[in-house]
Length: 314
Ligand code: TXA
Ligand code: MG
Image (cartoon, rainbow, N blue to C red; front, side):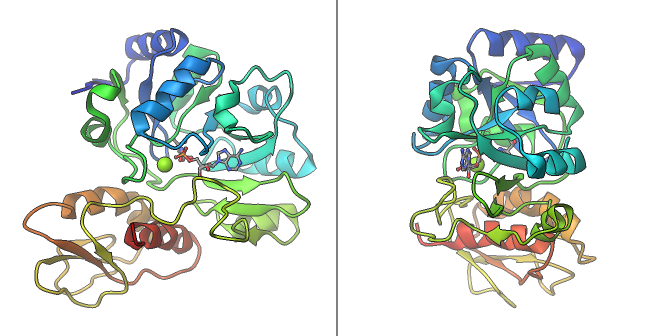
C-alpha cells in the first residue's frame, strides 16, 4: 500500500522534494485528491499516465499557486483575467493558449496547443505548490475511469503501490472536480460542469457561455468520455425504490435509502458526499446502485453529469 502521511510542514517539504526529483505525490485539493508530478519533467508526467492507466490523448490540468505563475504558462485575455480574479483560488480550471516558452512537458497537453490551468484553494495544495516552486500536473488520483478520490484512503485503495506518498488533508469539501472553461475560442465553453456554475461564469463575463464542446462523440475536452467516474456495480438513475440486490442512494430524505446524499436536500452537501457514498455502496451484498433523482440546477448539473457518466454503458 502507499504511505499516507498527515499534512505538516515536514511532510510538505518531503513531498516537494519527491516532486522535484520526478516522483509522484498525491495531495488534497478542495475538489478531489490529485496525483501530482512536476509538469516540466517529461518522465514524471509520463508516469502519471502509467499509474492511472490513462489514455495519452487525455491532457492534464496544471496546478500553480497564484495568478502570476499561471500567466507564465498560458496567454491570458480579459475574460481569463476576470474569471481568475473572481474564482481563484478555487474550483475553476481555465483552458488557454500555451506560451511557447512555458517550459511545460508537451505530454501535459497531449498534443493540443492549449493548457488547462488552475489555482487550488486548499491550504495543503497551496503549501505543496509553494514547496515545489514548479507547476504541478495533477489529474484526479484514481485509476482512469474509476471514481475520483475525496479522502486519502480512497487514493491508496485505487492506486496502491503506484503512488509512494499520499499527503492527507482530510475529506475534500467540494467533492467534485473543478469546472473546466475553454477560452481558446470566440465563445467561452464549459467543458466540464463543477462547483462554479455556467450562470456564475456568464454573469462575470457578461456574455453567453455554451455547455460542452458540441459533438459528444468527439469531445473537445478529451477526458469527457461518456463512461467515467464508474463504480464496479451498475448504476441506475432516477430511482424511487430499489430492485432486489440494489442499494438505494437517496437525496433529500428518500424513503428506504441505504445512504442519503443530503437528507436536507443541500446540493453542496450532496456533492461533497457523492463519490464517497458511491464507493460505500459499491460492495457486497449489493449487486447494483439505484440513485434517487437530484435537482438539475446549479451545482445539481455537475452532480448529474457525474451520475450520468457513472451510469453510462461501459
Ligand atoms: O478538480 C480537478 O480539476 C482535479 C484536481 C486534482 O485539481 N483534477 C482533475 O484532473 O480533475 P483530470 O485530469 O482528472 O481532469 C482534467 C480534465 C479532463 O476532462 C481533460 O480532458 C481536461 O481537463 N483538459 C485538460 N487539458 C485540457 C486542454 N488543453 N483542453 C481541453 N481540455 C483539457
Ligand atoms: Mg479524473
